[in-house]
Each structure stands twice: as structure tokens, then as C-alpha cells.
Length: 108
Length: 114
Image (tube, rainbow over all chains, first blue to last red; front, side, top):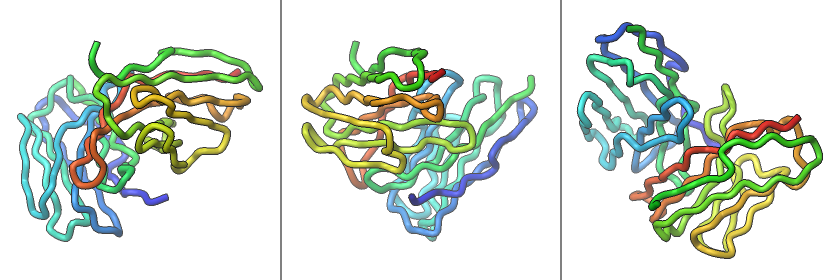
């Protein structure tokens, strides 16, 4: 099936550092979504992007919808221990197309 | 409680046994989905349903059966469990399809097949 290329696969960072991750596709999407999965839980929606070029923030999180509509980026500023988890991008189809996730570890 | 729930949360079974994982949502969402999550594979769609009595295969449907007789319930059955079906299973629901679709996930069922 269709896949999104999400990178990096995993990251180890120091508390306080900024984090960047991205998601690319060979296909155009009209909506991009970013989910976070805490350890032992189901994924939870963080940010939804509906317009090419759109930049949307949710607290320390900022996500961008690429102008080509084939990519999206997620940045986390000043990371804290509770940012640990797996971050998934998803592109709009029915059903959604998910990336394989970026596993984030934060070292205090 | 409102939301989406899954039961059981943990299950150990043996090869060849039938297992049913339950999913219940209280939002009256039209769409429901079953995923499995394995290391290195992310979330893989097993089956989904657009409404009661309407189901469609996802990426990895083999060995699984679903039904949707009521809008709020979407059980997933492993007819004859295999070790390769050891995984974490997530149910999700969404109100809309298309551009405004947002899926809400349950807490997951951790299944071990011995």
C-alpha cells in the first residue's frame, strides 16, 4: 500500500533542545496530520494542516504543510521529558495513510 | 465514559485459538478502523468500516474477520491465531471521511500468541 517516508526513524536528544522531523510522499495530499503516541497508549492528534504553505502551532509544536503538498514538517522547541514518544505523520486519504513514525527519546 | 474503548487490554492465547478483540465508541462516528502496530512497521490497517454492515479490507487483512452490526461496535476476530499475529492492536474512529477526517484512537490491545 501507499506509504509516507518519515524521518528520522529515531532521535535521542538532550532536554531543552529543538527537534525537527519530516514526512515526504510521492503523491499529493490535501491534508496532513501529526499524531503523538505516548508509551503504552494510542496515538493522539497534535496538529492538522489543511492548506499548502500553512504553518500551525500548538504550544511548543509547529507544523508546516509543504507548498508542493508532498511533504510536511514538525518542529518541537525546547524539548522536555514528556515529549518522549512516537510521532506519526498522516496524509489525507480514506483511510488515512500513515508514516512509520519517529521515535523520540529525551535525555534529562 | 465517552470516547473509544478496547477490550481486553491484554490477551495471551495459543496458536490455533479464536480470539475476538472488542472496540466500542460512544460518538456515533460513521467510520471505524483496526490497525496493528509492530516494531519497524508503524501502523498497518487491517480493516475499516464506513458504516454499519459496510466493511473494507486494509493493507493486512489475511487471518482477520470483522463485522459491524451496530454503529458503535467494531469487533476484530482472529479465526485461528498464529504467532505472527502477536502485536498491539488499535481501534480508531472518525466522524467524516475526506479532507476533514480526524481519527481518534483507542488505548490498544496487546496480544501475545504462544
